[in-house]
Image 1 (cartoon, rainbow, N blue to C red):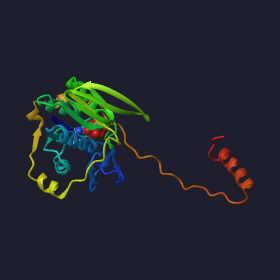
Image 2: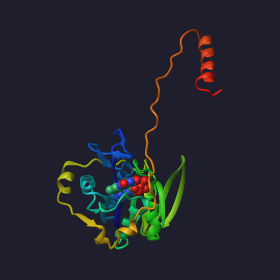
Image 3: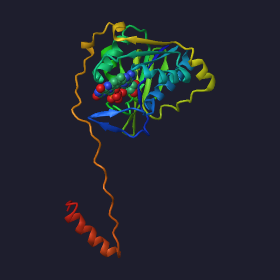
Image 4: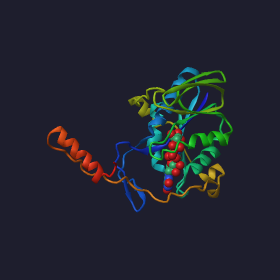
Length: 256
Ligand SMILES: Cc1cc2nc3c(=O)[nH]c(=O)nc-3n(C[C@H](O)[C@H](O)[C@H](O)COP(=O)(O)OP(=O)(O)OC[C@H]3O[C@@H](n4cnc5c(N)ncnc54)[C@H](O)[C@@H]3O)c2cc1C
């Protein structure tokens, strides 16, 4: 099987976000593989263990994403591709899916696995947009996947319920928590990863003009939620406290 994993480099979830002049400051931030993409990588590895094949991890980003691609190789991917988009200004979901499309349309693939959502951008758009461009079926938020020849059966999470879906390859799926338990890279895996192929491509290599990947969206403003004020501790007997609470809800919070 030819398996491709769409992998995004994101802020660590523990990272405190700082916004200056409308931009997110990422100096000194810790970066990780988008957690949902780790499920996608793990699923690709398990499918390869069952059916054989090759796994290619693909990232659209800057040169620094090489570190996370090496981690994907250490987990068990066979090769990696970094599509460098440093020339693109403020890429959006349209830009990223166009870039991925121009790369993947020239590849032979059976299955493309992505994350259900990126924990930073959070739009959940890139993978379904890519499936649409490639004109292949797409199943989002999967929690189970079985491949039998060219048939695929998946279970997807729908707000706590399970939906069972049948389709055929080539297919794109996005991973939801519960699909598997992503493995940690082993020491031999880390050593092997250093020698695995990591190809770096530019937009020119994909025959993609900058204009064709120009964003359709412009972010007008970014801001953090207002700081929470300190809570008020009411004193006295329960009846007095209840009286004061009602009075505060009426006069200060103005909710009753
Ligand atoms: C180098 C770079 C510069 C950026 N600069 C700006 C900017 O200036 N202004 C701005 O508003 N936004 C910027 N972005 C953010 C960009 O618009 C979003 O990353 C992109 O639109 C994806 O949307 P999302 O994060 O909501 O991903 P989602 O659609 O939520 O991601 C879902 C899944 O799609 C796949 N995927 C998503 N992104 C990638 C990727 N890059 N490579 C491979 N697979 C991917 C993954 O499998 C992921 O789990 C930048 C992103 C990059 C990589």
